[in-house]
Length: 154
Figure (cartoon, rainbow, N blue to C red):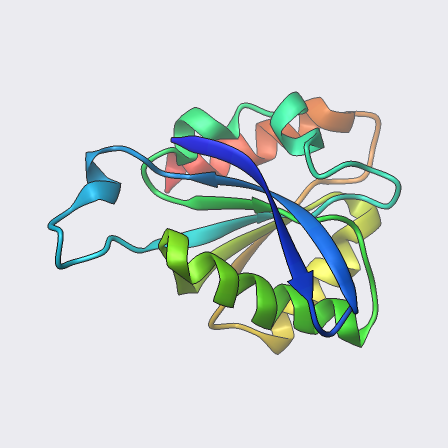
């Protein structure tokens, strides 16, 4: 797998935006030269004030998602323009890296849970499942346990 920071210009936000991405690079991603492998997105919503790299620093999702998902961790944001950025511009950009525009999972902390639920309700093809960290004292450990359990169960 390859993990990198992608900088793309968002026309709807009117600025450059950095997103943290992990692209599968296993045999599953290589495929035949004429057939590109596609992977659903594992969208890791950043909590308010958090960094797009937080999911990578505090959870163990990468080994479990490695051959099954294209992982996307965008910066925090809100509003209609931000929603269009996430649901239109990011998928268009990442299509070149094998992002499948259906069947994605969206993960969120309590602080970004409402946004995750709204995105999934308005865009059910792009986001087919929502994983919410429960409120409580568990912090990143709790988020890691929830995401890990989901990825193991498939």
